[in-house]
Length: 380
Image 1: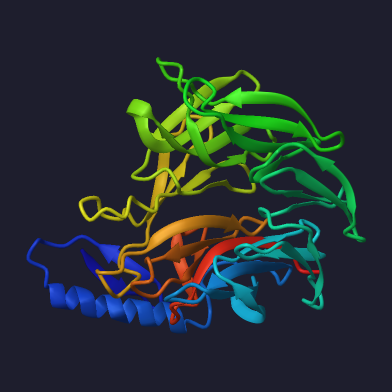
Image 2 (image 1 turned 60 degrees about the horizontal axis):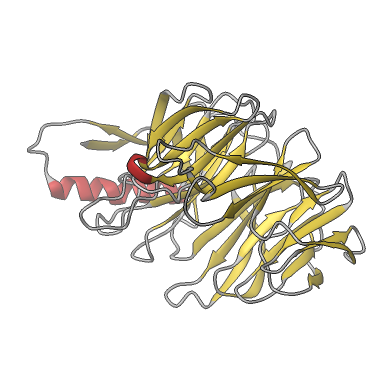
């Protein structure tokens, strides 16, 4: 593998003979890292300053404290931060850009005004990440015992639902929420349950792609297509192992299965619905190296359209990057991917040009702070 930096400051890879110098490879890797970190301008089209990226960051090595970084999606620079969070923080933003919520271990979610970045109030007991539904004027906040529904902008308890009690996603174009319920072994081992968020009632459930023994795909992360008709889930299943499954919710049929090294990666659909991007963090097993790729699939057939390699971005071969979540700017020109190296090295957020499939620059490229979760929203 030969790696070079072109005139635009982009990392380029090309194959070379097996006798290539390891020392030269590492030297160029360090140079590539420095070029990405110090780059002042990206290549290709950039979105306007209409969007902000929120990143829940944690400090190594004990991960006891963290902060929320607010990043301008035009300049890819950090413009503000909310500090003094406990370890393993999370963040989610309101789709209208007015609020964001920060979550830390063992603490209630805290609602912030997105303009002033000051705290409005905490939401009751400790729970999972809330979901903002601006069109309904509510925030849905699941925890281990129930789900509380808060009114907006008062953030007062409006009602309490017995379910769901796990992470929730909105189904586009409908008054629907979806959550995964794990019910043990057998055909109902993992269900995706659909709720009407106007009534709080469960209206449907789906066992994703049961195998010959009747055991359904065990869902870890999932996302809907922009029209809400298809569901994509990462996880695992019996003889199939870890992977991603595409599922048609109308016909109740499996569209495709694609194997991964690990089932706890993320999948996201591009804003135009034409591609599914999948991360594969790997198994963290020394006998199974970290893949260090982002896979791009056709949303219907599951055919692999392309891959984006992040190998060589870190100058240390002992600290391979694990690609985690993906977020697209709504105009589809950029993708952000938060990465980790198990705190063995630097852990940047990658900025990817979706047209060229190139890593355009790094955010937090010179820091060991790690982005645990990321989200994107309009600038308020």
